[in-house]
Image 1 (tube, helix red, strand yellow):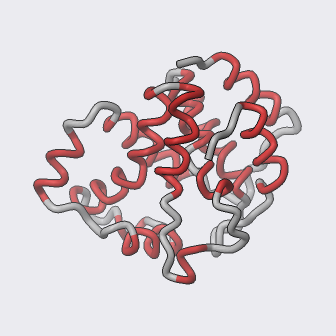
Image 2 (cartoon, helix red, strand yellow; image 1 turned 60 degrees about the vertical axis):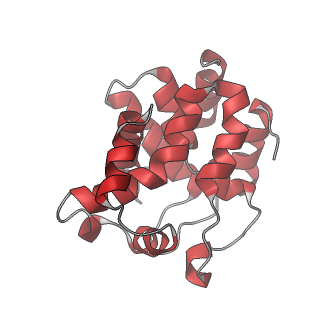
Length: 183
């Protein structure tokens, strides 16, 4: 699916109120929280933008519920990568593409990580291939942007707080960040 910067803003405006099942937050809240966590961590503007847009693919599918509840992997990371690559280049698109693999890597390499995942993340983990094998872990770790994907994954896991609301100017902040990042 081809999209431009205005189309990204329009997707959030139209579909950002969709809720994550069992997590008590919307797509918009999650996007903002992840972007804000990245900003507070001192991430580069491209990585901040990747944090904002890592779940954009969920909005692009047109689905109105939680696909994992029906046993469906919507491949949101691949959809988002395709859309983001021509707009912002690999520094944004690759961490987005790899954030699902980062989860699989962390489950395989960090004891107790799986137990900290949300119910939806656990369901999606099973649909996405489960924990990586040792060889898969080695291959993942050697990819460009793998370290950025691991940072993004940490923000993804933390950015699920129902009590933390985006400020009124959050959409303007996203648009400014999109203007600041070019391929």
